[in-house]
Image 1 (cartoon, rainbow, N blue to C red):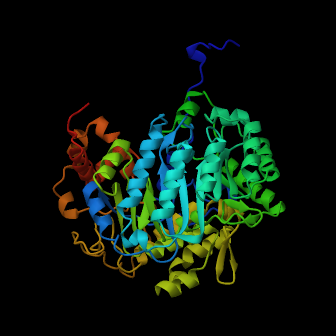
Image 2 (image 1 turned 30 degrees about the vertical axis):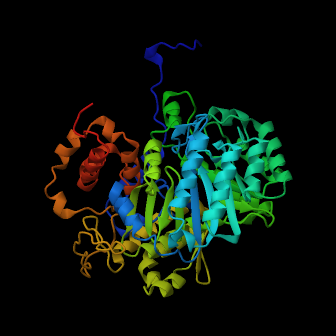
Image 3 (image 1 turned 120 degrees about the vertical axis):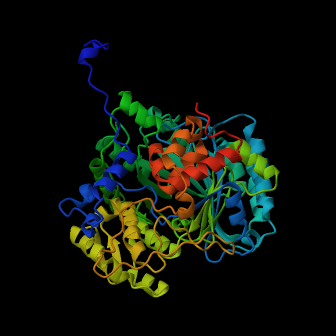
Length: 580
C-alpha cells in the first residue's frame, strides 16, 4: 500500500495515554469522597488495583511562597544545624540532547557553560559556609543530578568537588553519587570524579535495546554501554548502578526480558527498575499522538513487566533495597535515594535544584541567568518554597514508609502520640483483603501488587489521614507558623461532627490561600488578563506542579495562585496583562 494514503481513509490520530490523563481519571473516579473510594479492586490488584497512577511523588503539601518571600523565609532556618541524616543535592542543568520522555531538560550544552556554572556552584557553596545549617551539619550523602552532571569538564568537576570537601562537613562514609550519560563521559572526567571522592555512578541506561534507545534520542548503542560499564567497574572504586525503564514504545515483554538478563550479566552493583511516565507536554507524547512512534505500554502491561523484574532479580539472589532498587554485593547502599523520601534535610545547590531544610521544601531558580544574577548578588537563589502544614513530619513519614515497601503504624503512633492504627484501619483492612498488603507482626508489608501501586497507596493514605489529625486546616487556610516569621492567620478547621464523615477529598488541591485576599479577587477576570507568555513561563509551570494544579485552565479555581503569578510577573518586569 502506498505510504501516502488518501486523507479520507486515514486513521484518526490517537492521543498518547499520558500520566495526566490517568491522574484526572483517578480523581474523577473518587469525587464522591466516600471511604469506598480509597478501596482497591480485589479482582486483579496487580493490574487494576486503582483506576490509574495518582501522583508522581507522594507526600503532604504546604503553603507556597515565591521569590523574595521564599528567600526571606528560607533564611530564617539557616542558623540552626540539621540533625539526623542530612543530604546535599547538586543540579547541573545542561543536556547535549533531549530525551523524548524527559521533563527535566532545561538548557542545551554550550561550550563555555561548564566553567561559568562551576564558578557559580563554588560561590554558592561559599554563601552559607559560615552558617550552622552548612558548617555544623554532617552530610551523609551527596547527589549530582540533572540534566547531565557529566557535562562539566574534568577540571571544573575537580574544582566543584574540591569546594564540596572544603565547605561541607562530610561523614567518613559519605555516599557521593554522580549521574552520568555514556556519551561525552570520557576517561578524563571519570578519573576527575573518582579523584574528587565520587564513590557511586548512576548510569542512564533505560534500555539496552539500541533501536529503542535511539528512538528516545539516547545516543549510545549496546556495545558502547557494555564496554563503558566494564571500564567504570575496572577502577574498583565506586558502586556502578544503572536505571532501567519499562513501558517504552516498542519495548515488548521479550525486549524487557533481554534488558533484565543483560543487566544481570554485567559488573553492576545496583539496578533501578522504573516505570515510564508519558507526560502531556513531553516530546514523546507528541510523537506517539502523531503516529511517529507506537503507543507506550498500558498500566496493566507495565504491571506485568514490574512483576517480572521482581521475579527475575529475586531468582538471581539480588538484595531488595526498595520497591524499585536492587543490589548485589556489599558496595551499593542507595543512601541518598532512601533518605531523600523521608523528612530529613537536604541542602540544594545549582539552578533548578530541589531541597528541604527544617521542613521547608524549596527549589532554586530555573532561569539560568537569574540564578547567576542572584549568586553574584550574594543570595541563595531560592525561587519557590513550600512552608509546612500541620503534621508535615508525620505525613511525610507515612509516605516514606509506604514507598519503602513496609510500614509500621504502631511505631509511628508511639512516636507522634496519635493512634494512626485506628485512623487508618478501614483503608488498611480493605487493602489487606484486596491483596496489596500482608501483615508480619506489627509491619504491613506490600505484596508485588502493592509494590507496583506503592506511590498511589502512599498518597491515598496521606489524604485519608490528614483531615483526622489535630490542627488540620482545609485549603482556604494558611498556617500561622513560619519559623519565627509572622504570617496571616486563619482559623483551624473545626473537628467534624460525629455523625459526619471525616473522609477527605481524594487528591484534591490542598494549597492554602489567603481567604481575605481571595474574597476581593475576580479570578475569571484575572485569568483572562494573563498573557500566554506569562502562563507558559517555566516558573509558572513549576509553581503549578508543586501546588498540584494540572492544567493552565484550572488556575481560575485558584485565586491565590493567580495572585502570585501576577506578583511574580511584576517582579520580573513583565506586564502580565499584556496579551500576546
